[in-house]
Length: 252
Image (tube, rainbow, N blue to C red):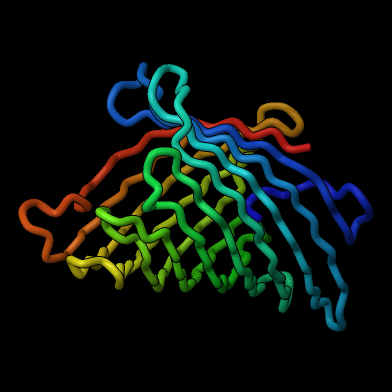
């Protein structure tokens, strides 16, 4: 986890809940047009191995709801349920490997063709530098998305190999700087127009601990999607976006 959580059982076991609220505005800073609310139950167990090696098992469940339109946003856009089991193996105090599987169900209020079961298997390699104050995390994953097949709409089944590079720096005065570069190749193999997307994103987040378990994030994200298909006319899934965000997180 990017954020350190507090143990609620022992120093080797933890269980708890957290809530994250997320607001994004794309065009006018006075127009808050997207809200995410995520509730997470998390638990983990740490095993000490020989030669300072450790093995950590973890299991998370989260529920997320997305609202759009209005200020504040008021209309339901989607709901998500997900489970994330995995483990991380610390080779030393400087390196670790994390493996996890995410299974989630996305339900969209007004777009039944996007309702889907999402599967992701991911491997991340963690390098701790500068006495643990700087983390460099390259990673790779494979995603399989199985969407509902609705007559008269495009199909959203796809498989996607993905690569990413994360950097996390713990700064003075309770600040944390986070950046993420990500690439995915999404092949919509059941789409009639042979849709294949090459998706790039770059994200920066500056986080500040405000009070005990309350944290505020300020972020910027650039998204570029190059979609190549035989769809007649302008391809509807080609876009580039600049997104500014602010979020507040309370962890208990």
